Length: 103
Image (cartoon, rainbow, N blue to C red):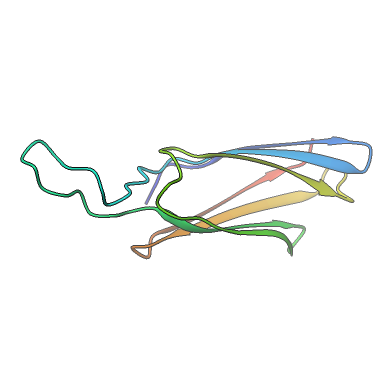
């Protein structure tokens, strides 16, 4: 399983700014190793975020996203103390879910 995501969520009024740093190699399947062989594709293809159990954002990604991707988004209606959960799945079936509390 991948390293934990670093998630920060900070409320300003009724909007929370969420910043997520994900740990993932994000191989496109087009790069070659030292021996000249293609490195197999391995990338995040689905990201979801929820606020207090309600899905507020879904995203589909492809192989062109960079290694260790950074994602930032805003959630309307969030307040300090609310729980934000971010989850991803990749093309090989691996997944990761982490959470934080809105500050």
